Amino acid sequence: MAHPKRKTSKTRRDKRRTHLKANAPVLATCPTTGAVHVYHRAYYVDGDLYYKGKLVSQAAEA
Image 1 (cartoon, rainbow, N blue to C red):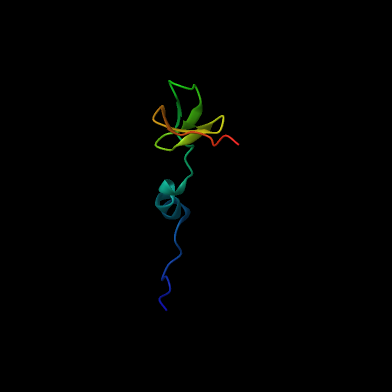
Image 2: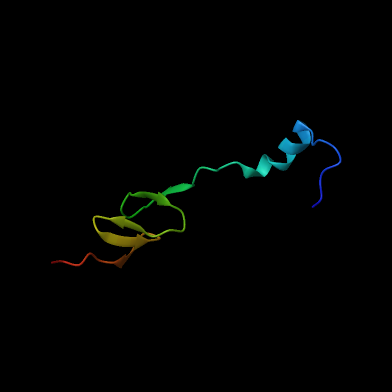
């Protein structure tokens, strides 16, 4: 196996890791229901499934 010839400096190591940070998810507010949800994801409001402010699936009434 290959081994490094020299120790990698802290600066060089940290430059490589700059893109590895976690990002907070971008949230949107639905104009129809007012629910806060993650962009480009379907979301439930009172058992009904919505996507882009439109009702996709209603809750089954038992």
